[in-house]
View: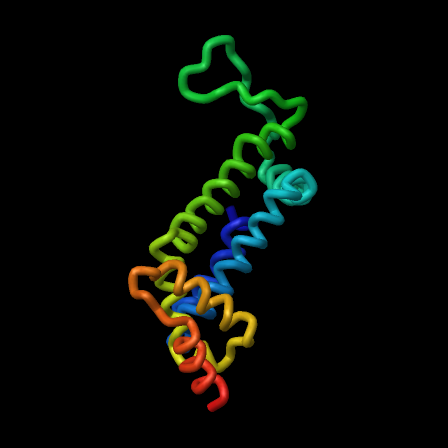
Length: 167
């Protein structure tokens, strides 16, 4: 858990800071998701390192590393096929926890509702000033697509942005 949640702990403190805005929070969340997706993609090599660290601690505590026995009829858990404890615990613990945390982050921060809020927050002048012209065009296109019912005039909208952008 420390291996996985250490990625989110620092971001949690950063995001609670008084100087943070929603646009920088989006970048932080994107980095966390990317980091966890990398861990998931390289789960075999990452878990071997993690397992070796755990093995040292378990040896000091005189805990035997074993795989739970398998039975013909399981009612409380599934028989996960594995040839050794490393493979078993990677499949049963590490990968499901990673998947769960990733899914939770995506659901909380990349939902359609939150995407709309993030999109609208980018219209705040401080965000627009720091935005590249390409990103600005992308934002304007996205807003006119998502809020087509407002019948936004893109040319006028871009003109307003240019006035802010150029100062």
